[in-house]
Each structure stands twice: as structure tokens, then as C-alpha cells.
Image (cartoon, rainbow, N blue to C red; front, side, top):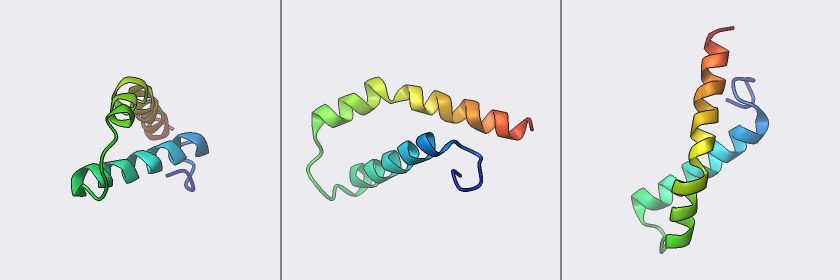
Length: 61
């Protein structure tokens, strides 16, 4: 989505990192760090809000 200018590059990279982390959670490839999971749930929810805002901006073009 970053390459198609739907999302800005910074948010696109953050979403890619979250997708990698989701894969770890789903498949339990490694031991999950509780601190990292808490950080994701506490801080990075703003990234999801920004993701929604940017998608809506794109759809309203």
C-alpha cells in the first residue's frame, strides 16, 4: 500500500512489522515477549487509527 501511495511510507513499514508480529503470534514460531505484546496493544493502537484515517482519505480522493 505504501508503494501505491495509499499509505505513507512510515505507516506502511509499521503495518508490515505488525503483520510479521501477527505471524509469530498465530504460528508461535518463537517465544512471545510479554513486554512486546503489551507495547503493541498499548502504544501501537494509534497506528491502527492512522491506518484507518489514511485508507478513508484514499477512498475519498
